[in-house]
Amino acid sequence: MPKTVEKIISLQNARVKEVVKLSKRAVRDERRSTVVEGVREISRALQNGITPVEAYLCPGLVKAEDRTLMTQIISQLEQSPSTRCFEVTPEVFARLAYREERDGLLIVIPYLEHHLARLPLTSCPFFCVIEGVEKPGNLGAILRTADAAGVDGVIVCAGNTDLHNPNVIRASLGTLFTVPVAEAPTPETIAWLRANGMTIVAATPAASNFYTKVNLTRPLAIVLGSEATGLGVEWLAAADQTVTIPMFGAADSLNLATATALLLYEVVRQRGATTAQTTN
Image (cartoon, rainbow, N blue to C red; front, side, top):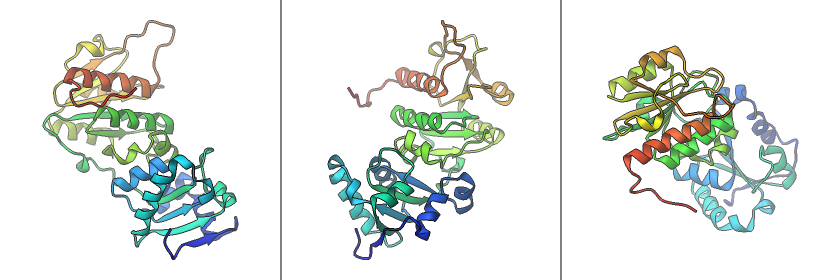
């Protein structure tokens, strides 16, 4: 840690109380700041140019397998003049943390900018649009899949989505920082996709075509809705193609993250995963 590191041993410390308040969305939105916990998640944030406002380290909680990466992270934090660093006791870290399994590092970061204009446009774009997702775990899992599938960006529409919920970051394994993400109203998103020449493929149980039978090699936006209500009428009216996932059991729908994974990897399959890395 930097030589100017401050030590905190009291649970009543004012700074500790301020970090704890970030567990509430209203406070996060007001301050436009959120919390990131976990060595892997923090590493990905730093690698993608995010500068923490504050960092809290508890050396006694650092796991042996994380020490090398932790050393690299601390070195980077030391070089950031705008990051205030604190060393805390295990009791104080437990008060700050939102994860049950703690590895001794937590940072506070400013909100990210999530505008359509910031999304990259490749020669054959591949976007995922999610309407009405509210569960942080679902959204995080979708981001993780989008990162793995090489999606150019994820667009979130409608609903009460909280992209900066610490549990979104956790469920995404930090891929919120690696996948370009935008948040926009449905009409604005449809107009942006149209202006950029993308085919809109909407997933709905009412479709007659299985998702494996439709050409997904064109400039493309795969659009999915919430498990409870599905896609709204605006998306169904705007869709160039509708697709469905075959269901042969008693259940009439899949988990949103699971359905998204199926469709995104069908795009990967059709386009040819010649550069994909395989894992066991």
